[in-house]
Length: 568
View 1 (cartoon, helix red, strand yellow):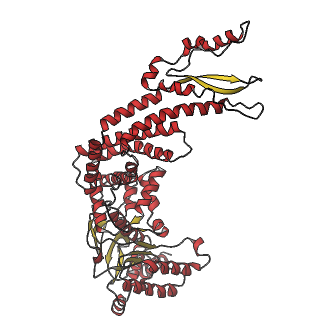
View 2 (cartoon, rainbow, N blue to C red; view 1 turned 180 degrees about the horizontal axis):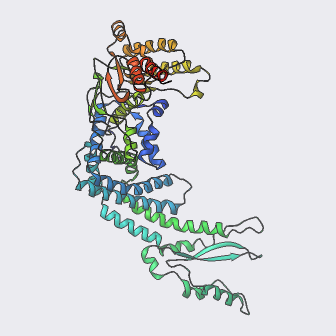
View 3 (cartoon, rainbow, N blue to C red; view 1 turned 30 degrees about the horizontal axis):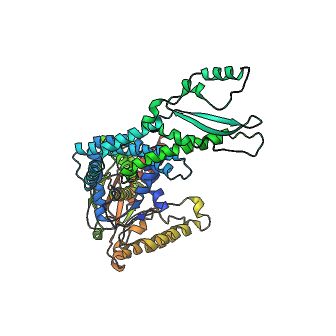
């Protein structure tokens, strides 16, 4: 499973591009991740996978098929979800294994825990994959790999050995120690008398000690402890389970000393730590020799799938909720990148779908959207709060989700992947202090053109909308010419209606094969319809509709004045 991934085929040479921080913000990636999960680790891992995209058609198709399996089989998600906690334990154990300061005992126990968790995960995964008719290349590869590991690694014997070793490690419950005192009656050396498989629970030991200390002769001659052996000796069966055999070796260390040069210091705790660690190291080495039989069994490769599994599960859960609301959602169909096309039916903004799934009463309007040889750059105009930003963001999210293999909020989508998504939304006022708004926006546009290619998607939202319309319009015209020359796909939503006029002249006089087209957000009898369609800018007609609706045309105002004067 070392090279197995659910995100890309084995031996893939796909290249990935990371979204800019502006694009991450403008596409509301944090809002999306927060809607998927409240767990910080999950949010971060999903975000990192989401913002690194590739236009490799094979990788995208691979991911789409894997996600299809996750969405198709709730039982698969349910079973894998039950493994997430176990996988999280394995991830923590992996971190601990890398801790060079960890004691031999902890390294051994955690290695056993890792092995045990790994066996459980593989067994559970094998069972669920054999019960479900998975169809994607990624899930079939995972099924094949899991079956091979289970069948080739002696899992029944491994599980038995792990249980025996854990029982051996856990059977040590107490240690009988001998402590030597110096002339000031301070502990100076400590040695192990026996290892026991029972805890000291009888308070009689204290009574015996007090009785002994109050005897007339007070001191016991020699160091024979046989008087105590009857009460709390090592269990005879201990040697049979592998711990008793360590006692002889441990007794050789009885004279090992732990001295302190500081008057009044208590070396007992440090002495105990060293003696116990030295003894248990023998147990550790014994268990490690057993683990060597399974040296090829390594849970770390399985832990590496954890972010990928979380990624698919959380998105599948989200789209289950969205589909339950009666909203369309579909698997995108990939066409060659060189076509630079997209055909999307019933597209809507995923953010609205999330809000609807969360219980908000919200009306969602779907639209048709096309990029092809006749129209790759749209100048989108329309009223405030008429849906310009919503549809612009919806297009970006549709590409982002599709290229990650996730279903898109649409009835159908056939598209050529883009190599990156660039956005240019209004900047924070604090970012424009040094250069001014126009200067800052121009700088960001220049940076986009430094790295964008003909396969890129560029989304502009009210760009260059300065107080001086003439200046903004001057730069905006050059920007759309540059986009045509480069050959990108773009949506440029703006209040500069003059930018959307005379596009035939720009298309004719500017070299390039990305044709520029005017698109508007619709108004129906003064009401915003949130529908977009190809048409010349309709700023005047929209104002006329609004004026008619609210009675502020000259004719209606005149009629009101005349009526008022006649009544007086």
